[in-house]
Amino acid sequence: MKERLAILAAGGGLILLLILGVIGGVFLGRFLPGSERPRIADSATVITQIRSVAELVTVRYVFEKVVRMDDIKWYGQNRLLMIAHGVAKAGVDLQHLKPEDIEIHGGKLVLSVPKPQLLDVYLDENKTEVVERSTGMLREFDQQMEQDARRQAVEEIRKAARASGLLQDAADRTRIQLEALTRTAGFTEVEIRFR
Image (cartoon, rainbow, N blue to C red):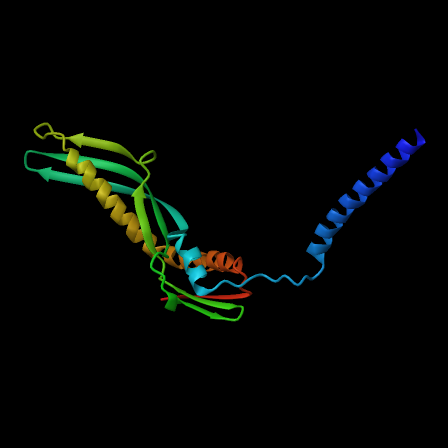
């Protein structure tokens, strides 16, 4: 019986030492400087990694526009008043990066990307509504008028987005996101340029 307890105690102690060794190795490996440094990727790897993002949408603005359409004829008028809720998204298209857009100097990466642009402008159909519609007695209901109002709203939202500083915000956020993405490849310094 004593022999069995001695064997179990020795086996348990050995298992405990093994567990402590593994845990100690993991913790010491995290806190002590090791010989393993982050591997810096080559330009082909960086291009592949960035191209996989495709269109990088970095900013999304929401706008509200009131659109009024009047079609006045001598025999009556059609009128429409719409409150349009629109969304404008901006960012950069990364699909066309070329090897010459990337410069690697040791641990420094210089990346040239296209200037930010409006990638999408659309109406939020759940929030856009026609608040007034009137049709003259001698006039027929004009479905095209509502479609014209929607097109006009999208164009006004596009203009408002450009005037609001959306593209500058997109440039700032693109720089932040690409720096974070490329630092994971092991670069200690990252410079983003817009072409």
